[in-house]
Amino acid sequence: MTSLSELRAPKEARGVGALSSGNAYAVFNRNLVGARGTNLWVMVSGFFEPVFYLLSLGAGLGGLIGAVELPDGRAVSYAAFIAPGLLAAAAMTGAIADAAWNVFFKMRFMRVYDAMLATSLGPLDVALGEMAWALFRGGLYGTAFLVVMQLAGLNLSWTAILAIPAALVVAFGFASVAMGITSYLRSFQQMDWIAFVMLPMYMLSGTFFPISQYPDWVQWIVMAFPLWHGTELIRGLTTGALDWSMLIHVGYFAVMIALGIVFATRRLRALFLS
Amino acid sequence: MPNGVAPVIRAAGLRKVYGSTVAVDDVSFEVAPGEAFGLLGPNGAGKSTTMRMLGAVSARSGGSLEILGRDPDRQGPEIRAQLGVVPQLDNLDTELSARENLIVYGRYFGLPHAVVAARADELLGFAQLEDKAKAAIDDLSGGMKRRLTIARALINEPRILLLDEPTTGLDPQARHILWDRLFRLKEQGTTLVLTTHYMDEAEQLCDRLIVVDHGRIMAEGTPAGLIREHSTREVLEVRFGSERNAEAAVALADLGERVEPLPDRVLVYAENGEHVLAEVLRRGWDPVTSLVRRSSLEDVFLRLTGRSLIE
Image (cartoon, rainbow over all chains, first blue to last red):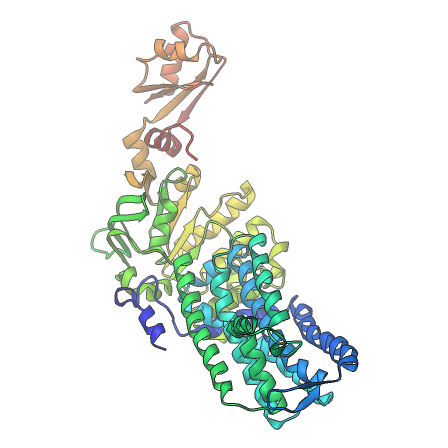
């Protein structure tokens, strides 16, 4: 990533703001040790949210709706349509729960990063370690949900297995950007802004119905949302409706991840090593 | 500074500017290996900013700084790897137990688990927290948290320990236990650099210190040397009632090297306080209470940094 190497201004390459000691694992390890204690049940609860949505909307509402037509012309059950959307949305909410809320607490109240950055660790270690943790959780939830989908007969193609790495890519994109944004926020009121942005994205990004229901100009707006790209990518994989446009979705997240890492790392450095 | 020993910290003309605020103006000092060095000063004097630069987490705006022979603006992580930092505000990890705090922190330095696990048990012993190994951080007292923070700062076997107001907010018992632990470290040869605004702490712990105000060094020396240089051997404190103190100070002005009227008492700085007290009585000034004491670092500090409230 060229943008990352640009971040290393020559003068500071190994100075106070040196980016990394190559030890992001120690940051990940901190979360792993912490999770063994009190956080475990909070973590397990994160699995149930998409499962409840699937039960109520897929089984309940789906009975009324019947089939939904995919872009390739095939008709699939409503449950098979929304399940990949729920998976993408769960990847987003899980990533943001870790990279926004947990990071906010660690930054403002627990002073975890003050402590970390007084050691050999650099801001890139902290950013990558925190994101890796968000992905680890997201990966566990995603895999569990995909197993539920398999048992319910909602995976229509063998490519559904690729939905796990795809969900990780989606989670990575949201985690990296959310961490950078969170670094600017100082109060709980400001943290509510994140929910304010997430909710419309959740409701409108084609999670619950095809965006072809919208007028053209609304469709263009929705197609700018990252969650829409995540939903389309994962839905293509679980339904087997493969398409070259999926590369655009992957590309969208590659850019988002790269920018997010640079952004979060710069912010950590500005806040704690200046 | 003992001759012939290379200093572990060498600061010359150190300066830190935030926007238009000059936090540290022109600070120069050296610290010898094994020395206990103190930075004294009122709030906002620039102590914590200086400590952040020494800790290689803040780049200097000017001057030169060398820590363990390295320049923090070029080799920040290498320097941080050899430092132990005890920050002013506790930042123990409240999601981890006491022992986990030590182990996880040690891993931040890239040390193997087996090494830090063994050191963690040793350090819990050093911090007198063996029976608290599994305790949650929130269940520890203020003094225990500080000792654990010091133990944590020692997990990488640092060559220099930086302590920013280590005993602020602790009760006297907890302070004395902490001082005892710091003495142990000093005996073992660890270099200590600490800030404090407790003068008794500075007198107890520091071999040498600087008094900082407005980002500049006001005085430098050993505690005893500073007292000799900036104060008299003894101080007579006499109270005449708040109505008469100012008047008395004028009448007794010639009795000491310096006479300082305060709202509640008059301080007479002199070589022999008892002699001065006898003369005060002979002149017919009958104090409500009187006290002769030795000069302390606090007298020096207040003389150099003033008595007005700084916040």
